[in-house]
Length: 81
Image (cartoon, rainbow, N blue to C red):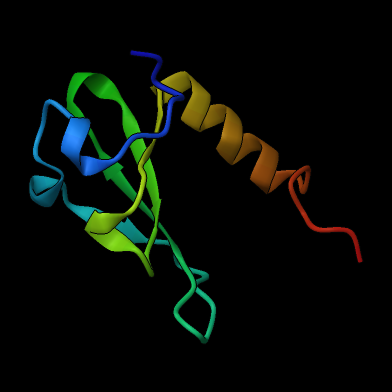
């Protein structure tokens, strides 16, 4: 399965409930956060904190995750003002 494919907990070969999720340090006051967790096979998972275990998980390789972080740090993903 493509690591970028979004999936629901029902079709994963691992148990999503066992993943340790961390919220970003810049979570909004309303609690709207992205949670990140280490997945099996060296993948990184990202999910919406409001949905939690019931929602989809975006799975990225380590290299893809580093690329996303680099884009965030340089402002490439900022919303236009």
